[in-house]
Amino acid sequence: MHILWLDPFHGGSHAAVAAGYAARSAHQVTLLTLPTTGGWRWRMRGGAVTLARLALALPQRPDLIVASDMLDLATFRALTSPQFAGIPALAYFHENQLTYPLPAGRQRDLSFAWINYTTALVADGLLFNSAFHRQEFLAALPGLLGRYHDFRELETLPCIAAKSEVLPPGIDLAALDGPEEADALTGPPVILWNARWDYDKQPGVFFAALEHLAAQGVDFGLIVVGEQIDPRDASYLAAKARWAAQTLHWGYAPTRASYGALLRRSALVVSTAIQEFFGIGVLEAMYCGCAPVLPNRLNYPALLPSELHAAWLYTGDAEDLAETLAHALIRCRSVPRRTWRKLAERYDWAQLVVHYDPLLGKYGSGSTHLDTPNHAPV
Image (cartoon, rainbow, N blue to C red; front, side, top):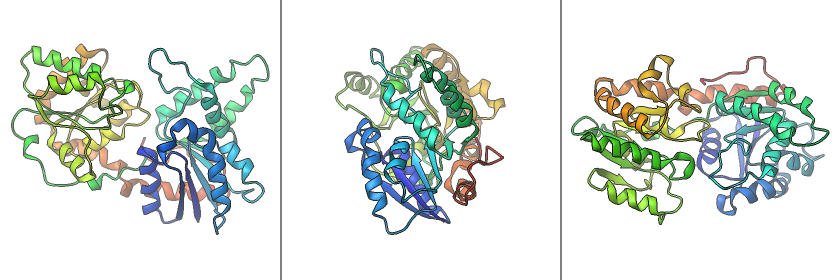
């Protein structure tokens, strides 16, 4: 089968999933992408026009179209008709613009949420990266349509729900393999922060929790690695200076190999996010042996068996996190690192591609709904 994968904002997890699947699928997968340099807003508004032009110039007609959530699929469908008429199209939702939390003082531009809605409407199937994401998006749609005074079209929502299912993103975990780092087994436990430095990841809460630990005399090392949106950010620079004595590494890892080495050097990975539709960074760290300390919200509870929730999930503010962290720093050395690796490795591409290929194959053969909604670990 020939799959045309459309990615108007080809970066981060969008690019990793698209390229990862294309490299491993038994199907022929053609990636048609646009760079992130134009910004996600322009890509959601204009990407469909450009990708429609490029798609129509391809020498081979696809059997299936897969589009990321950043594509205005309704516009793409219109611009590629009649040449692409009858080709099934799926939308893969990494995130959505209806429930994505906004920083204080910013109002939501509902035109982007509307693009997500019309994309869901015209797609033959919707694939969400987590059950949490699917549930949150479907629950928010009535509020979007209910804002209008008439012709709310609420009857479209059960149809969208019926064609929605969960397909976790594949992760190139094997690329993180390497020799065990000595710091992970000796000396003070190393706490890892591997999230993007931005408001929705709440770095301030993380460092407030470290202050609580320091006040109690708790000894630990620190690795801060992840994308930094503004390297001149005052809070970023202040935290770097404050924790210099504990820091083993600070800054973005330039290669997958160097990133993996830092993860293997760490004992614990911490999240304080208020937005996380899946949790790739946490699973990468777990695969490398890090014990997770995670908020009891979003998709994080789904990443751990229920019997581990009480010990490794926290509820509340920085003080609650600090208390959970203090216990975790003691407990993590008694839990074999392979425990966390085993939980994460089911999301490696070697495990997930066998779910992707038959699922997409059924859509490509003309089926627009599958009887069993979950075909991969959630």
